[in-house]
Image 1 (cartoon, rainbow, N blue to C red):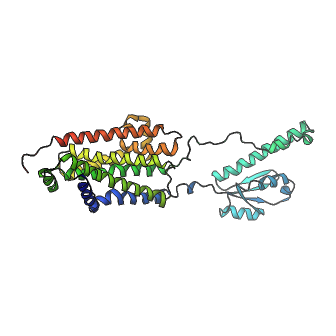
Image 2 (image 1 turned 120 degrees about the vertical axis):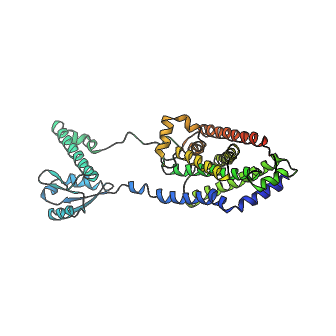
Image 3 (image 1 turned 90 degrees about the vertical axis):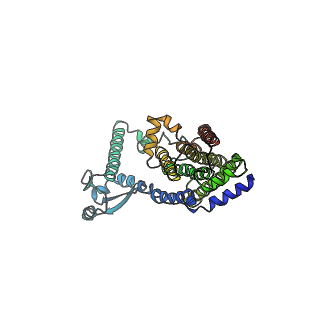
Length: 375
């Protein structure tokens, strides 16, 4: 009887097109929209070399050290060798960010202020400072020319190196895909609602037939819940495969932990739906509305619409983050992607298991006491 009802409920869920759209196709469409919106977010921050012109004259020829120093900055500047007239024309047409001229001192000519102009000015100030230091050293210690001390004036040594505190590079866009996974898990509540309605005689004809049949109601309900969880987990894995395989979003390489998070997240979502359907004694439309409203509220607090909201909750109301299943699911994937140890991951998983047990127990005790005056 258990396997028969399990297979029967699988067929019923798969044939419910509206249910399949909201639990599978809608998250995939959102993933595509997220990818279109965030795919080029870092390209706008890519550094573009500064265009600068160097005016050729006798003063420049007399200062070959400057030309040599500028030529070594090819990773920062795109240098054009021009005459003064050409440099003026290029600057007026905004073809360059500024031009450098010895007249007779080193000068920078610009037509506006901005980051690129500041970069050029910084390079010139550094060169002038190094030149002044060099002249001071030579005047006070001529022997420095032979000892090699002069070489240290122009050398630059970095004593600090940037090291990531986590095993993965920070990526602000991946957060939105984590919240999308959390939303998909909680959208499994639609499946849970559907299964509870299917066994309630006052809400569906199927429920009336089940309650008059000589079958164990708990067996029927458990098989229905297993069918709903199976579909939900399969849909979640399809979404993950699409995000990783098609969109190219990384979720880390700990596949076992990722699978565990998907299973627990799916169980939490399905049982959350059964919990809502059991305690709300209203029509299916009202139950669905409450489920959608509560799910989107939790996703909003988890940062789905704005990462700043998640930060605000974490800093001002941290307890709210631990009481939010969507936030716990999101943080589970965060822990796998960023942290070097699985401690935080298992904390989130245990809290999700607690919510699953709470939802399941409440659903069981509410439904087992439910009776009907007539069918």
